[in-house]
Image 1 (tube, rainbow, N blue to C red):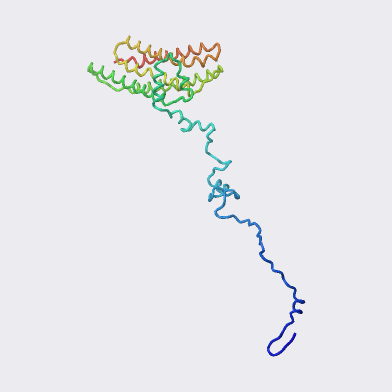
Image 2 (tube, rainbow, N blue to C red; image 1 turned 45 degrees about the vertical axis):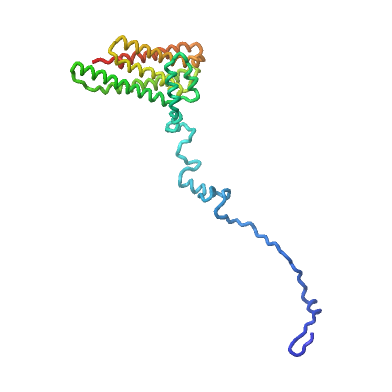
Length: 281
């Protein structure tokens, strides 16, 4: 080391010997540990948070009451579903053309193809409106006939509401109770049939009584008996022939069941003749 004037000279040999040189590190890759923090918005697979910005499932369930073990709504396949309107909606979802074809089929009882044509899609729309129309026609025709008769004889006329209630009980009751009873009987004899299919068959079997009621306004007793007998025979044949192929699987009792079905329809025709087709003043 030399000193002179205003500067000092340092020997490079001595400096290099006392301070080691550091090599150029170049490009160094820095790695950070994976963070446990969740990103925002959260993904659909992280933790309990799902559906983008939806709240956690456990938090949502605690307030809404729709968790796995606390639901109060009936499941779609449970027995409570039978008491909902949605359970019967498919049976009223039918086209007008289908209803018209089934009405025509009921007027040709000897074909016996009604159950085959309606097996895939039986409906309750037609039976409901057939029974409702029968009640309206029976009440209106009975009222009209008695009104004209009273006016013709110059007598006082009073409306009889019992005709409406009695007609509703007969038609709605028959098309409900008889198929239910037949359903139980066929199930007992190992020849079960669909309950809705039976409701559909019996409902359309009553359609023939609508024109018969309209013709009952003719004040001729023998003519009324003929009309009631023809309508009853057509209705009974329609039901019996359409159920014959299915009831044959019941064995020896099949003939007895078919005969009972036929006679029950004829009994209905007799009841209608005595209480509805027989309007008197």
